[in-house]
Image (cartoon, rainbow, N blue to C red):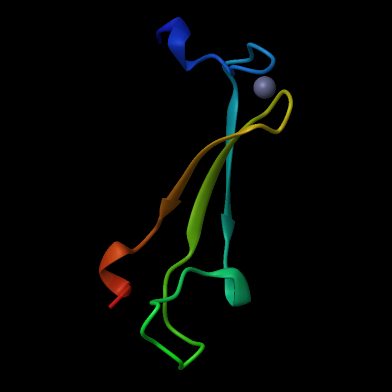
Length: 63
Ligand SMILES: [Zn+2]
């Protein structure tokens, strides 16, 4: 692994992943249903908690 993966805050290269789901899931701007959408996958630094990446798990689920 390259050193540029190190956390910009604390220098740790260890990452953890979690997800945001339920009411906080990503929804279409055009939808009023309140359901559907996709979970968000959050990758964060194990050392300090700095979020390094947020990704839509199922982009095709957002219409
Ligand atoms: Zn960090």
